[in-house]
Amino acid sequence: MGQDLPDFTKGKFARWNRDGSLPGELDELRACLFWAQRWVRHSYTEEPTAEDLAYAQEFIEAIRDAVEARARD
Image 1 (cartoon, rainbow, N blue to C red):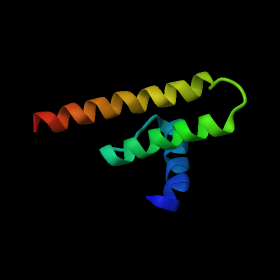
Image 2: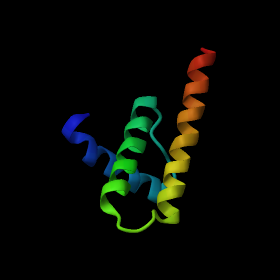
Image 3: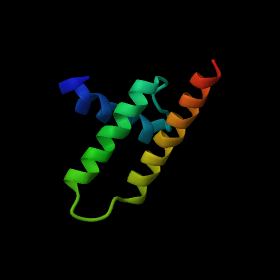
């Protein structure tokens, strides 16, 4: 995704806030989790918020489910 990654993930975060939905593709899930981690790491002077942690946890669970589904196929 390169330079488009920040805009892509910003849209996915807004959608998650609006309706709780996540991307369906494994690569998109990984990209969003990667960018969320980078953003928190480089933007905060304090600990991540509960919302940040909930967002990350949902991506981790969705990635786990996608990897398990791919392994079964």
